[in-house]
Length: 490
Figure 1 (cartoon, rainbow, N blue to C red):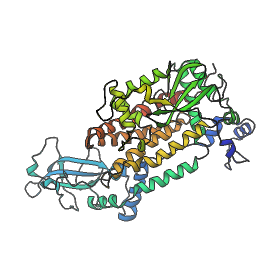
Figure 2: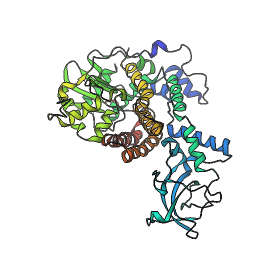
Figure 3: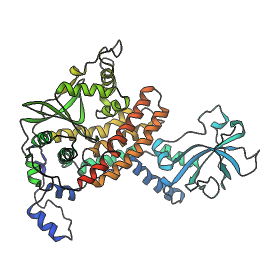
Figure 4: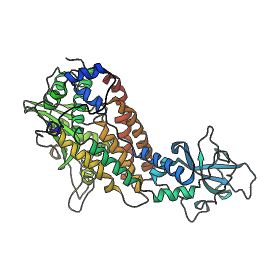
C-alpha cells in the first residue's frame, strides 16, 4: 500500500451526507465505488489572489463609499493632460498608467504621476469632482504643456475619461486603502483552509494525476506503451488498468512496487518539491515527471541522458527559471558558504566552462542526483513539500512594503498553478481556473520583467511567464478533451 489515506479514512458513508437525485448513480457506487466517482464527489478548487483581491475591493467600495462596482471593470488611471488653466476643453491627454482596481491592489499601486518628485509630472493635480473633459490622443504631448491627473473610471467602449465615467471615489482614497489593506494575511489564511480541507486526499490526487498523464501521453504517442506500463507498475497497478474501471479501494490499497520506484530529483543537494524520478531495477531507462508540463512524463535512455537534458534546458533563461520554480525559494539563494539552486542551474548552462572564479565548474552529471526510493507512501511525501512551498516562498521574497504584493502575488499565482497543475488532469473543470491564473501570472511577470532591479530579476519575470503560459494554457485544454473519455486498455 503506497498511501496512508486508508489509515486516516473515516468509517461509514464514503459519500458524505449529501443526497443525489440520481438514485441509479448512488445504487451503483454503493456496490462499485470507483476512483473517478471519488473525485467526482470530492472536487478541488483554489481561489487565486486576484479573485480574493477583487472580492475585497468590491466589498470595501460598497461598505465605505457606497459604490457598487466590478473591480475588474473599473480603472485607476493617470493622465498627462494639457494644462486646463492654459487650454480649453476638451483637453488632449496621454494615458500614462492604467490598471483595474484588482491589479492596483495586487501591485500595491502607490506611484504619483511619473514617480519623479523633482519633475512637475511627479505631482498630481487635485481631484476634480465633476471630472475633466479629456480626449486621449496617440500623439505624445509635450511634457511641459501637461499636468498629471489621476482618477478612478468605469470601463467603457470606447474608453472615455470624463464626467460620464469618472467615479466620486478619489484615487488618493483608494491608494490609501491599498496601503492599509493586508491582502497577504487574508490569502495565507485562505491557503491554510485549503490545505486543511485536502489534508487527507491531496496525495491521492497527485497519484491520480500521474496515472492519468501516463494514459493520455500513451494515447497521444508522447509516451511509449512500455513506459506507460512502467508508470502503472510504480503505482502498483496492472498495465491494462483503465481509469473508469479502477475501483477506489484498489487505487488506495495498490501495493507499491519494489522493482519500479519513485524518487526525488536533487540538484546540488536540494530536492525539487514536486518532480518525480521513476526508475526500474532491471532497466537503465529513467522517467522524469514534471507536473503541469505540456508533456509531464519525459523518457531518458539512462541517468546521464536525463542529466544532460537538464543542462541543455538550463541554457535557455526562461526554461531555467521554470525549472527552478519547482524548488523552494529558500533553496534558491546563495549564502556566505554555499551556493543555491539558481547558481547551480546557471553553472550547468555554461558547463564545461567555469561559471565564475568563486564557484568554478558545475558538472551536471555529478550534481544532478536521485533520492532514495520513497516507500511506502511516495505521494504523501510530495504533498508535504508542495504545501510548505505554497506557504513559505512569498515570505522569502518580500523585501519592503513597496515590493510587498508584486513579489507575494507572483509567488502566490505560480504556487496556485503548481498546486493545481499536478491534479488538474483529473479535474477538467479546473482548466478555466488554471487558464485565469496563468493570465494573471503573465501580467505580473511582464511587470517584473520591465521593472526588475537587476538582470536576474528581469529573467525571473520571464521565467514566470514561461511557467504560466507554456504549462497551463497551451497544454491542458487539449488534454481536457481526451480526459472526458475513458482510457482504452492496451
